[in-house]
Image 1 (cartoon, helix red, strand yellow):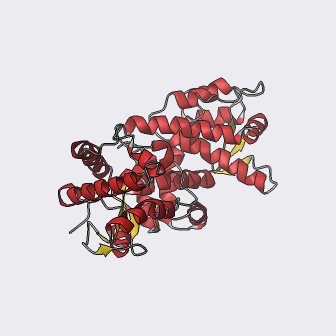
Image 2 (image 1 turned 45 degrees about the horizontal axis):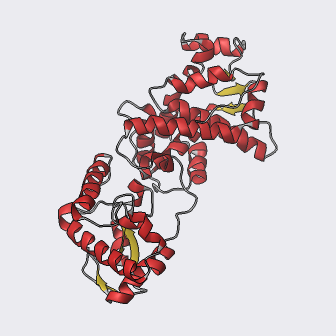
Image 3 (image 1 turned 135 degrees about the vertical axis):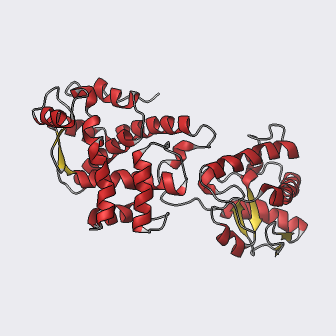
Length: 350
C-alpha cells in the first residue's frame, strides 16, 4: 500500500485525512493541479508558490478530460467536476483526444464567458474545503481568514484569485512530487472503481497515454500467420476478403473501454470500416457469432503452427484450459458490452 512520505516540518497525517473522507473527485484533481503547477514552475527555474486559481481550475479540467470523455468513466451523478467538463466540452467544441498541453493552453487563454463561468464554479467549494483537516468546516470567509493567518499551518493561504503555498509545504510538494501524484492517483483509482465496479482497468484510464501501443506485432506474429495458413478471411463487418497487408487489427470491444490490446479482443478488419467504427460498440446479436468463429479459427491455426506463441497466453485469463468455449466467450463479451453502453459508449448503426 502506498504511503505519503513523512516530514517533520508539515502535518502529513492531516494531508492523509483529505483523501480518507471524500464524496467527489474535486479533492484529487485540485491536489494534482497544485503539484503539477509547482513542477511546471520548477522546470522553468521558478519558485511557483503563488498560483492563480484559474490555472488550478484549468488543470483540474485538463487532468479529468481524458478519463471522462475518452474512457467515459462515471464520476457519479452529483459530481460537479464531471458536469463542468461536460459543459466546457460543448462550449469549446474540441477533439475528445486533444493533447492535454493544448487543452490547458486553451483554458488559460480563452475569454469565453460561458467557459469562465464553468471554471469559476469550483471557487464555491474546492479551495477552502480541501483545508478542512487543518481549519475545520467553518464558513468560507472564516477559512480564508484562518489560512491567511497561517493557523494550524495549512498547505496554502487563500486569496480571491490565487493561493499562496506555505514555504514548508512548498518544499514538501516539490521534493516528493512523483510519490504524491502516485498516491493521489492510487486513491482516485480506488474512489472511481467503487463507483464503476464492473469497468475494467480503471488505473489505466486516469491519464492520457502519450502514445498508443503499436499493434504491428499482433498483426505480423499472429494474424498474418492465420491468413497465411487459411488464405484471405472475411471481415465480420463488411464481408470484404482480408489478405496479408490489406487489413487493420481492431478492438471488438473498444480500446477506450477495455484499455488493453489483449488478443482475445482483437480481430482483422476492413481498414476503411475500422476507421469509421472508432469507439462504437458492435451489436452482439449481429456480430458475435462471426467474431467467435474467427477467433477460434485463428487460435487453432497459431496453436498448431507455433504453440509457444506469446499471444496464446493472453487467452488464459478467460480460458484457463485454453479451450475457447463459446458460452464462456459470450459470458465475457455480452456483459462488457452492456456495461460500456451504460457508461456512454454508443452502438454501431447499421
